Image 1 (cartoon, rainbow, N blue to C red):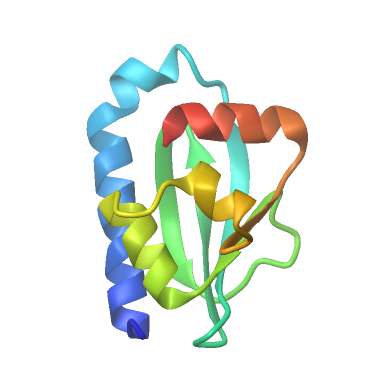
Image 2 (tube, one colour; image 1 turned 120 degrees about the vertical axis):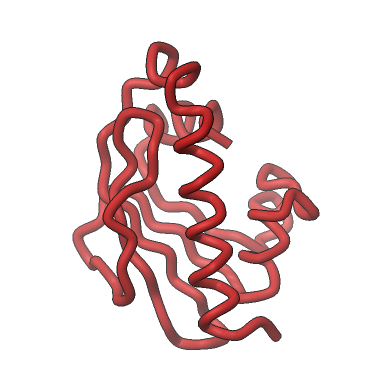
Length: 112
């Protein structure tokens, strides 16, 4: 099981990767939504905002009003960010749950 710090670092790594690609993605993905990432096995959560192809304002704690909510285990979160776990397969196998409207899901997929 990954630790809270490893999950926090994985999300920061994702934010850094998105920031590096923001210029090329910004024109293709018009998305400005709050995001919550709930880590089920650690009973913790993180939240931030997806905007302009970037993940910004990452912080500890849940955002129950987030427009996009991702729930998964700590190990699966780290594997997703590293690219060791395909998000489509993880959702199909119920290892990851993403709650968002269908249009946001399509846009989100372009970011990942």
